[in-house]
Image (cartoon, rainbow, N blue to C red; front, top):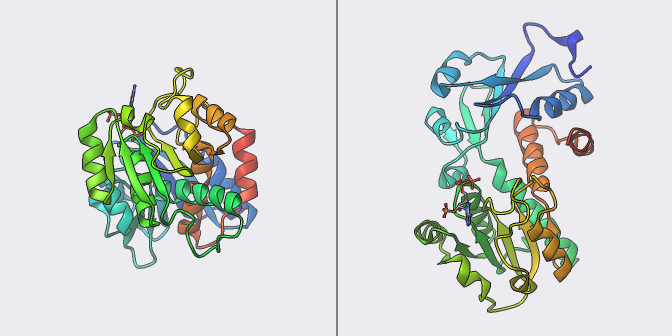
Length: 290
Ligand code: ATR
């Protein structure tokens, strides 16, 4: 009972997720339930896609509304777009494509919005009175571990909010390259252990250290965590990583990777439909099907 079968016809708008593999994605579950909850004549499908260019050439009719985009197409899809959101362009990866009424394809990266908004809300809870318009990240020292796709999203997102960014990575050259691009500072993971020019810093892990099945690992030892007021982990399997458990013990606010995942979905829904996302419904479904 996921779909509005009663409504499905020639004028049904269709959306989907393109990727390879793609069958594991829970996006169809979330988006179809959301469409149904507000009576939208729309459907969201899995598309197992090899050739993104061919895909967008084939599906160019007015009933096509757009797609989510996952591995391995987040970069290759860039060349098929008519317009790309400025930060998504800098990150060099997109995960949300909308076909506008004029037929143009416009792309976004909702990963960085999901992560940064979750971190901002965590900081707002901590500081209480930050006005919604001002980012609590402005002026903060923001340490990003990792310099891959997720690292880029966090570093660009934080820099855009006025944070002072430090990028640390196992391969120092990648840290340096990203730090230079965002106007930040690069260091090695070992250097971060002894880096505490001030208290109340923000830490974002985007490395795969601590991801299932190696859940005993952590990218930064516990003693180094005490200088951070908030710790975010982009890993969501497991939800409660060793890094987050130790940060919680140390007294930091923690922000789960699942929060980034769900919030990036809210942004995609808004971009697709122009409507606010049914946040509670998304949360319930994610929990039920975790
Ligand atoms: P994603 O797109 O999810 O960010 P990625 O591009 O493969 O994935 O990046 C993975 C990140 O985890 C990189 O920053 C990687 O460090 P390197 O650039 O040195 O490869 C980091 N990483 C992976 N395994 C690691 C390990 N055992 N210790 C430290 N960092 C690790």
